Amino acid sequence: MSTNEPTVTTRGDAVKKILAALACAVITVLLVTGIAGSALASAGIGVQLLDGTPGTSGMTASIPQGGSHTWHVKITDAGTAAETVAAFSSSALGVYGGGPAAQPKAALQPWITTTAAPATLAPGQSATVAVTVTVPAAAPLGLVAGYAPGAPSLAGNAFWGYAYPAGGQIQIASAAGVRMTITVIPAR
Image 1 (tube, rainbow, N blue to C red):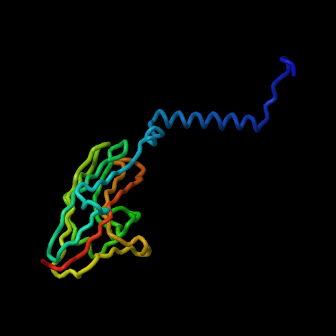
Image 2 (cartoon, rainbow, N blue to C red):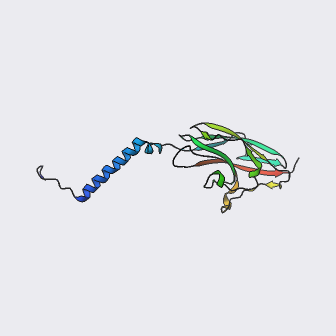
Image 3 (tube, rainbow, N blue to C red):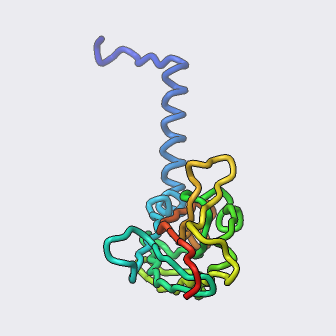
């Protein structure tokens, strides 16, 4: 082909060029408005048991009927944006969709009280909550079982930290937990 010959553009080539130009325009708009940039933020939660029993995993205690035991749990915003947080107990070893209100309940839940977690945490910020299990005087002796409807393999008790980006349009939640193994023993 010589330099004096006209360039032939097919209809398919023209469509490809138009689509490429539109894609570039959309990416530019997303970057300028910050929509694509906000996707770079990460969400995350950290949960650390501060005063567990050495040699055990999680919140493990033998509590007499009518007695109580308290642990302290540090909850940390491990993401790069402010996050709305909650702390709750569940009778499952996994977090069900729907957040804290959708978690299965069992005998242990009414026995647990916690100090309030802050509504939001800034990136890297932590808060410590006290978790107290108070066993009723008439509680049956033995291990307190969990209950996971439809998933018996997930039955167990756990204390969870739960977070999702504060004020974001897309709510992607994250959770981290500490297993709770509570055995009721006779009153002393």
